[in-house]
Length: 137
Image 1 (cartoon, rainbow, N blue to C red):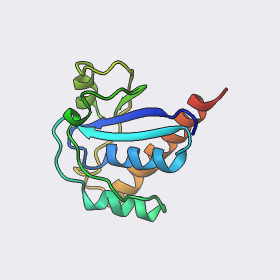
Image 2 (cartoon, helix red, strand yellow):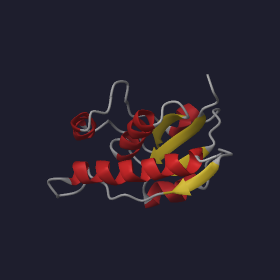
Image 3 (cartoon, rainbow, N blue to C red):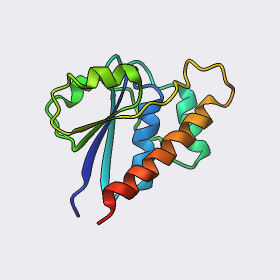
Image 4 (cartoon, rainbow, N blue to C red):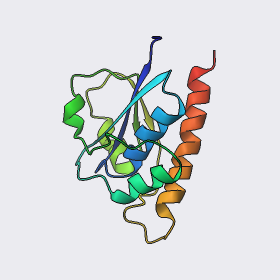
């Protein structure tokens, strides 16, 4: 098997945005990337996250909320924060990989009825662009 780029998506609760990103990167390019997600203050995966992924036909098996501490000895080429708070916290993490800060509105705290679908779409578009740029040879 060819080398796979390791990517860690970080958000505060690891309940929605980072879970969506992990599943979407795995779905979009499993040959070139291996994706993980974690939270700086992990909680539980929001059931609407799983529903949103299933609506797009993306596998959500195995998703669970994880602490950033689970990965403290792992190496990643990219550590991507998905909200402003985790972006600030990521600067102090001991990972050596390139740190990117993406920001998406939190669908969990949104009052918009289509918040999860909208967030899923935005993250999917960013993931597709990330894959295109990072795999271009």
